Length: 226
Image (cartoon, rainbow, N blue to C red; front, side, top):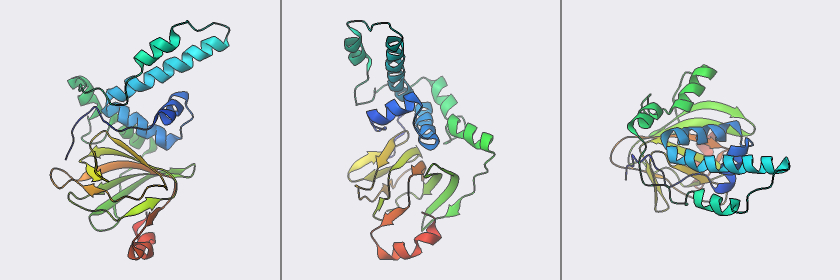
């Protein structure tokens, strides 16, 4: 499946979205959320609820009581775990995809940081473009050829992957454009890039190197840069 939906089914969990809203998420992860919101305004609507929660509690801390029906109204306002099925307007879509597969927050980051994308081979059919390394995290773009089976692996720490073009299947779950795939050291998986359509391009932030199950990949891992 190659998804072009701008109402993704996958995003960060409620705790991480609340951290984004409060400004405590790391810069790299915040950029991924910014990019997902640009691709899918439904995510922005979800996060706006957390902003309202924070604002309400700040007002409460100043001595103003919350209304008796605040929590009821909040539960009605909070979107369900399944994202809304409607697509954004053509204007929103054009603005968020103005630079092809690059969403506007990423384009702004590249321009502000004066980064020229330099793709490097990172294994058969895979290329990687480093963007940022700070706070114990690495931010990079990953491009994989259609139909490719990536090596079976797990992670040291968390890995967040936002799909910007194409898609893949992992453990029977499909991920397409606008989906944010979050994994950690407790998960072993093998993404399989969609065989039809475009190569898969993702914006990735991880907290450590991949842990390959195949000993050959462990030997050449320093050469792959992952």
